[in-house]
Image 1: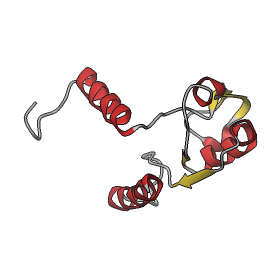
Image 2 (image 1 turned 180 degrees about the horizontal axis):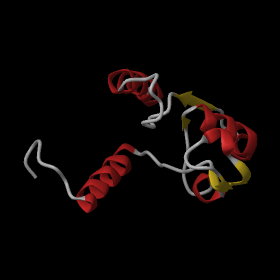
Image 3 (image 1 turned 60 degrees about the vertical axis):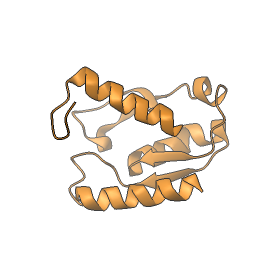
Image 4 (image 1 turned 120 degrees about the vertical axis):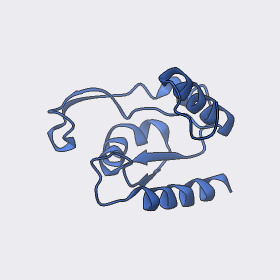
Amino acid sequence: MARGELATLDASVAAKRAMLLNGGVALWDVIESCDIKGSSDASIKNVVPAHIERIVDATPIEIVVCNGGTAGRLYKRYLQERTGLPAIVLPSTSPANAAWRLERLVERWSEAVDWAAH
């Protein structure tokens, strides 16, 4: 695909998957299911924590990074004791996080990734 050309959804997913696998990164949600109104984190109720053991038992996890404060709080409440790993909580990459412009998010996330890699 030429630089600047839009990818199909399948190509985009494949490229992101390859990037994560090549970088030794795993993505996992903190909660398996919950009741939520729209995308309002404040409305989250009836949380069923993710079955994190499926990935923790199969891989040598070195660091946990949470995408936003809500994920950080939920991880600490439901999963940190099960993994034995503290988490770094970074600003949410959600479009709803209007306080952080893309450039600032990239800078903060890059700092954490660089730190974690060393």
